[in-house]
Image (tube, rainbow, N blue to C red; front, top):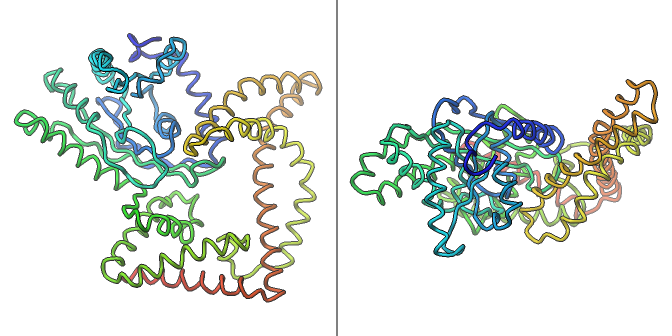
Length: 445
């Protein structure tokens, strides 16, 4: 499987995708929420256009949440080495050449363009990240014209017979870099490129701009988009303060709750700038004070912290400690080892990609080894198989154990603040409740 036949079905790729998808969908993330799958018609020529905030994970979010073998476009500089290029072609990734790659290399784009037509004709699905590069902000940036140019030129080259549609895609992460988070992927209604054919025949540049503008607006409707740069930090924090308890909800996903909150805040900024400013300032003050006192928003939301439940939690932790120890076989192998490389990477938006990639690669090495050891040590064979299967289960348990441990420690911290009548905590709790009250009033704005 190389560049020339990249649009053809690959059994090897299908097998690799199924294995990596299992690791991505069940181990790396604790939950994946997909909305709008009904908008994907596999019998049409589709171009997927997701927002781009989290490096490789954005492409994988599309790849692992719908069937098929879509082809991706990526910057050409990662194809410089032949061995790497061959592997990337196997992964169904095509290069796009830019001026910075050398003016003469731009001619290569002619061949790439012809190949994208083959992909669209074959109904594989073409994935183009229209922002060009990633940025760790919940905001859609200016889209590049490339995706629109590919759509128009491919349609034109096939006498407008392909009826190409662009699927806007919104991607949201409950946290960009941590393991066991929630990934939400929203597939929007397809944009018919044919709607812009008449404009394109009269003025290609005007058609490019209008399609790009339409695509931008459609993607914004499917993602968390914080327009304000000045108040970005405050609004982003308010999402956690208000909607964090709904992170695992499917109907509606937290993404839509966040969008509604942002819409209300935007309206408040227009109608009552003073109240909006007060809310933003209060959110940042609470963020700082909660961090200084080591108190999470979850603890601040709770009205009571019964001592009996905290003691019961400690007892549960003690009872489950042997399982936690066994689970560390998994966590040390697939969590701790990748951290050694991640620490050397300056761009935090690559951290999640490295965690996933390295942990998946280690799984190919260590899981067969663990299976062999389990089958040798434990008899009969089915017992060894059960022990092997229990390794990832215990690993996930150990991860949740650590979360529970931190929550119980936090609960005792709050109890200590309450017993000692800590004034800073009392003020923080009061300000937190006040902020929630102010935000609940936005429903009537």
